Image 1 (cartoon, rainbow, N blue to C red):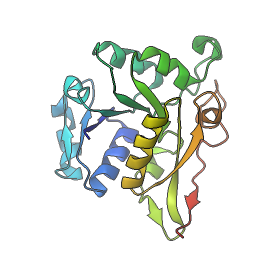
Image 2: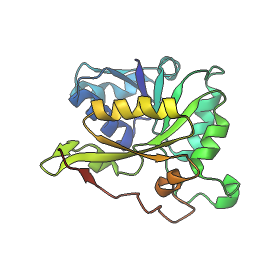
Image 3: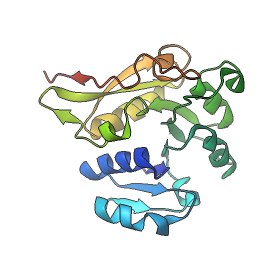
Length: 200
């Protein structure tokens, strides 16, 4: 399975650090080119590779860690989204509901990406928390997942576990997924909830 992260801001780098921690190869791309990420990637070790945007789009599972409206630029970067899983790590905080057609933000993204399978995950924690160890004496840190595609949700759950977290499936994007999607200037109930699942 090939993974890539699109977005090299604080959230993208935090996610890349978790791939590095688990020794899972991942590519990372931004819109400015791989050379701009060389210093950042060097500190993360050899399992994190800077890529061009086009190279990142070749991955089977893509983590979308960009400002919300930037997803439109990513959509236009390729015409082939068939069978790809896109993990929506964005937050639409501050985006007027009218601009979203009063839909959950992940539903807007799902409609924008033809043929891709959208899974909402990793967006409910701040970059600082995402960069921390996924497991503590309290247990494994919870990552919430929601998707309208069961197979894609299962694939992302496996990745979450490989990274050391505990996946919790909230169901469909427009149902349980609403609990992790900002609405205008209101944070959803589960955003910033740093929860742990005890080991048994």
